[in-house]
Length: 235
Image (tube, rainbow, N blue to C red; front, side, top):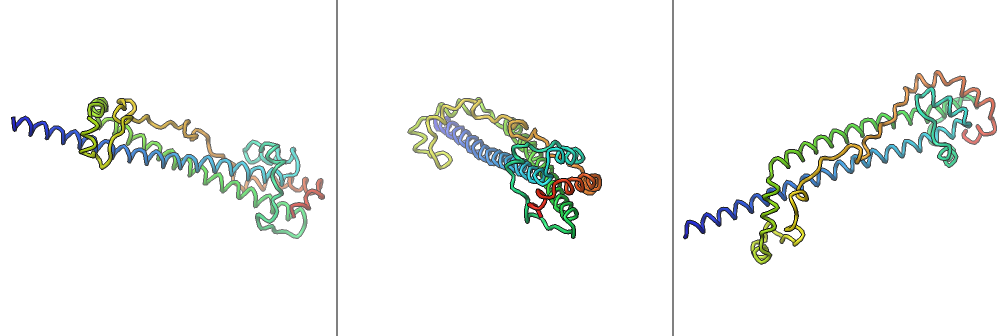
């Protein structure tokens, strides 16, 4: 009888250790998922900021035709006309050099486009970091699923007596009725999806500033010549 009690106590101890390991590893996975969510949110926030910067540049290009020509040279779609209309003139945002209005205008556009290009490079890096983290966490999730008998764990949790839980205080806290009723599916994690995290959106890929600005010189000179009154608002 003593041997049977010892074996039962040992089995109970092993089961409790399994539960402890499960919830400890589960918390780690949950924290990792938060990190992926934060990284994805940062990328999506960066995309929104990039759209606003593109609208600022679009406003500085003075006309729909100017935007169409310049953004085509940059390898980009023009910004939403409504966003351009709402964008404030980019005054004082970048140092402007030049003695003539045309020269200062080209300097303004060059600074805005340089900033837009730099933001795009940062977005590519942010997206890649988030994707790498997502893949790493998915690997941890697969290892977590392989390491735990979730059906057995669910059955064990359902078998626990509330009074026994109160006495033993497994993990330092008491399992709630909802936790004891968890199914094997509820105890598991699903791999994170790229699209669900918003990481299926590509980062913008504008052409390098040196090339674009050299090719856009005639366009910018024409805009400065045709719209001098509007130009003064920016200079």
